[in-house]
Length: 376
Image 1 (cartoon, rainbow, N blue to C red):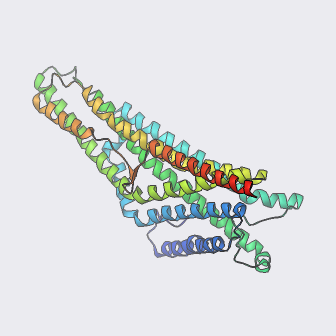
Image 2 (cartoon, rainbow, N blue to C red):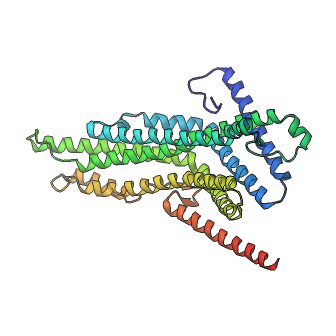
């Protein structure tokens, strides 16, 4: 629908639709937003809102480009997701996968509902208030300061519809790409939990009496689990490849927006602006907290693979079995870590560092602002 993923469509009509939609709704939209930022009056109360929207659009654009540029690699990841190893082989492992899938679906619904509710407040609530109480109606995103008042007022309805239509598409880009990123990481966590369960329960089969049969079965199972681990590592490597730049840009833009929003909260004089700043601040926090939390979980769950392997019945096994298990444990000593351009890890530690930096920036700006007020 939003022109960046054709699904099963393979005809030229979709390519034309995609080109026109992205040109109007992303390229031209961002050009107008850039012109607006250039011509925005240099009053801090006004400028803060425009900066927040602009840096948000930078992050959205990078997410869209990720889907378009890495489409073939994303399809390859989908094929890995659809392999037999990722589906589970018994009721316990299937339930692990199903429970995590349910968590993802519920998370997507909650995120989509909240974003659509916020969109309704920003776009339709002012229209309703204008209709009932005849309040002044403003453009939902920005005032397009590069236009003179006559052009803005004469074509106000068209500008309003264009901005409303555009911001909804961008909001859905955020909803779907953010949850897509979280889903990729959650699937890796889910598969690690499946592997942990398999390795911890790699024990003797009471129905087999022969020691040779027991040994042969255990080695086959272990090799199967090692193949599962190898596919998981390839999956995580592919995920790292497509998320590398996006993680860096999203965390960078979110850091700027959080700093600006925190400063805006200090200068806010009206209830409407305060609510807007709180909403945007919370949104940016969620956009970097959720991936950071999942990245941390991925790190610790992958680290626990070594302990799961140690809990298997390896003492009475043959030297061949022990050698394979040792090789696996040596590899598992290096936990799976996702990074942003190899500069920082996707973890709660990075999230904490961003928040500390934002608070330090806020304290510095506040002190400068207070000193200027004293001089005045």
